[in-house]
Amino acid sequence: MIGIELFSIDLPLWAIFLIVLIFVIVAWKIIKFAIKILFIFILVFLIMMGLDVLNVFDWIQNTISSFI
Image (cartoon, rainbow, N blue to C red):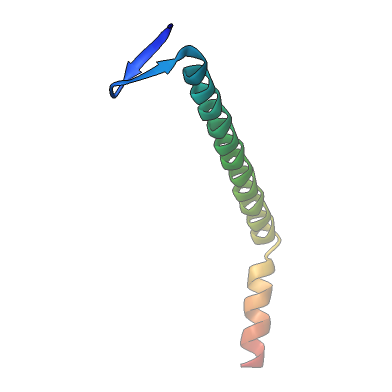
């Protein structure tokens, strides 16, 4: 039988292929999730930069301090 002996268990070639395929699929899903989170952080950062350029935070701070 073609395969690998791992921890004194003889694994056939199809089992090794299946394990590698599952590992690749899970790794790809994790990478896709990380890319989505990165894009969300970049979008939030760009929105915050835009609000800062438009002096929205200064306006909010002045509005709040005028009430207090």
